[in-house]
Length: 369
Image (cartoon, rainbow, N blue to C red; front, side, top):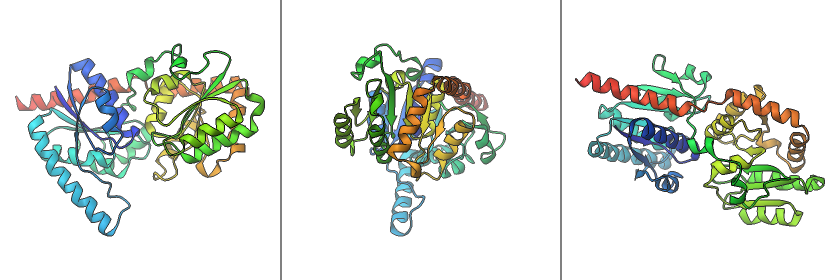
């Protein structure tokens, strides 16, 4: 079986595709080809995982006007033509779109070529690209029950958001040495603002250090800062005297989760799928400029008692210090949050999504007989 997985740009659209690829290889010996852009995270991560990736010209259309919109539409048309030619040479049994503008041209080209299509939707409220692509897809793999009301009935299936096997299997022992952190005697906080970092979270967490001097000997940080704020964040930890490993970007996310007693992060769908599959207590700070997708996702977890929600506009060093202190000092609340997080997690989502993909391939082959 040959499968093209189209999507990327950010980890939220890339990592579910990687999790699906691993499962399809394991279950069906599938040959996997990724399609994405040279500017997206996929250009760095996919080759490291040993998969072939083909780059397409792509640019988001939503929110643009005038010349910028015309340029994006022109690039999209060019991308569809290129994708259709590539699919003709690859001859995949199915194309899977993981969401975002990057997936539009390969999925549309697959539909034009009568190749079966599966769309993966990670958010409570589907994005514009997936709402449109779902109309031409053979099936949609949804993460949340709430999102099914926005997607075509009869071909939308609740699978959960696939999580990579390595995230689920990373051992806590040994992961500390990878980041030069103490394995015992410290409460470990993992801070991540996403693949590019988040200045607002960086400032709030480093600002919180001023209000937590009495905890200095009891806590340590693993902080993914992004390249822009790396030096500044590192300097604040040094100046305040807190034990911390600050890095611009973390490729070893499974190990980062493994060492964490508490996670402070954005609320991207893939991040939440990983947190809940592992049952990690979290303070979630939704990205405020993504059409409220992350806020919807985080609110669902907060309502269930699986995380604390803190809006970006509410961030300050003092407020972040209160949130961190409350969770460090209340072990009962942390344990309850972890249990509730595990209860909503779907560690078997990759298996369900893979079964959906394989079922469409079987139906196509049966129809051709």
